[in-house]
Image (cartoon, rainbow, N blue to C red):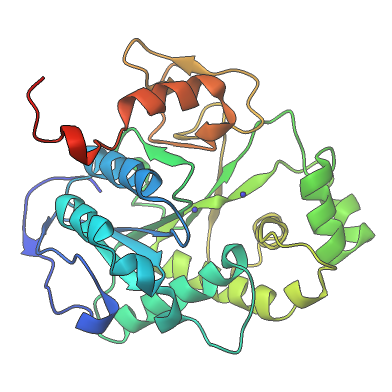
Length: 315
């Protein structure tokens, strides 16, 4: 504003997707749980994609990483090299989005992701769990799928700083008002903000969520009076329990396993630079890290592209 790595039992088949839809597909082993991370990275620069993918692979070696790009970027040699190095599956935005729809990427990504997952489902090639997230401002510190409670499947929605509510935030409050009116804003005024940039769930929960989100995009969004954000739709769905037969877990920023740093009052790190929650536990994922000058400085040092003129030099 989107796994427990264990005993290797299967391989991820290279013919899962058609060849004209993918660049960089690797044959990779999976754990007993098949876990998918999917993100839209259209118009995202090479360094940002590299930083995201490297953090994913450091925390989840065997999960499948799918990134939505435009076809020009997919064919770029630097991005192809990156896909090979970090086992990234690239899919084209045009393959999974109806040409007649013109919504911006923040909104259209939900339909792209739903259509892509449906294409897998028709082949009975579903995953156990799916994490949808932003790519440019999300970084992985641990395996996020390890925090899911497999005995209670459902959707995991991640809250922002508890001090800021939908009504007290002019931006989020504005999205609700623009899309759903003053009465809905009053109803949700004191609710915590749930960030649409990170959504986790079991396969069935994610598919149900995406189906509801698609309906909101195709109906409500067109009357949202110029807003370009999907987060109003997301908060309306989450706080009104609009997903049929699905339990929604609202995960605290302060004490949960994912930190959304935009409105955070404090930033706590250990000596290794890992960001911690209020209990001193390491967040599995940090989102909106680019809102912190400390984080920007840290990651500028940690993630760098090596210029061509010094790649073959010892000193």
